[in-house]
Length: 135
Image 1 (tube, rainbow, N blue to C red):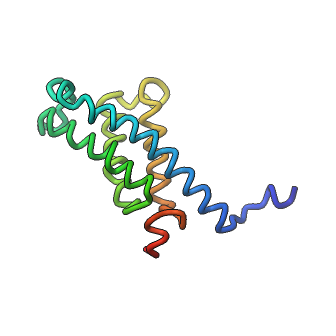
Image 2: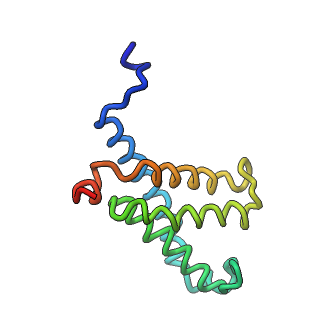
């Protein structure tokens, strides 16, 4: 019981938690990005025009973040760098698309935002390409 309530964290538990966090959030986000990638042609005309960049460029940036950066996170390759576009994407989705509604329509974006900020702070762990390469 004393070990269960301990506040120390062995390296194996930390690395396992980082692995599960990366894999879980990465695969779930890749699903969103893949849907947008497959339907790119039909979505580009009516996607949100963020900061005057145009709907096609905005959709392209979202697909890059949600699919390709999420794939890098699953692999554990350039993990911290790959979380930055996803954090920006989820903050824009929460603020612009869901009007900062954390507990309603924007709850998924808020959860993803918290998860990717956690991955940014924790890093990839040893069970990753970054960890194997010794970065």
